[in-house]
Image 1: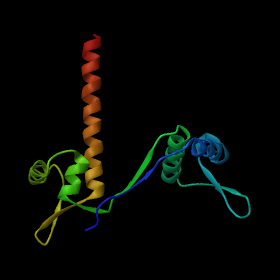
Image 2: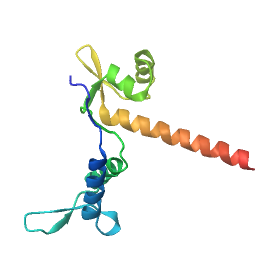
Image 3: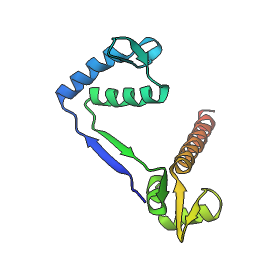
Image 4: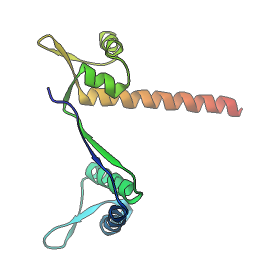
Length: 140
């Protein structure tokens, strides 16, 4: 079972200038990123790749530290608990209660990274909705 691989890029002022220059060269109409080929023809990148690259370049242009983590398709309960921000026993309760799907590999419990990420995103959406509701109540 592989664990997440993290790479950290500490940017310099020169990196920031270069990233800004690259952004100006590759952002096309409607903010779509395009890449040039050997024949100098600009081809739009797939949306998800374009968004990812644009976020990285914008962070570098601001002089921020960029951390990229590659998460395997399947994770252990320890890794999933860290991703969710709960203890492993709490994660195991969530699995038992059906909040998170998991499967057994021999005697070990494994989770699909996509399921863990979807759970995190759904939880954030619920938190935002609750916060917005609270704010609307306080504004009245």
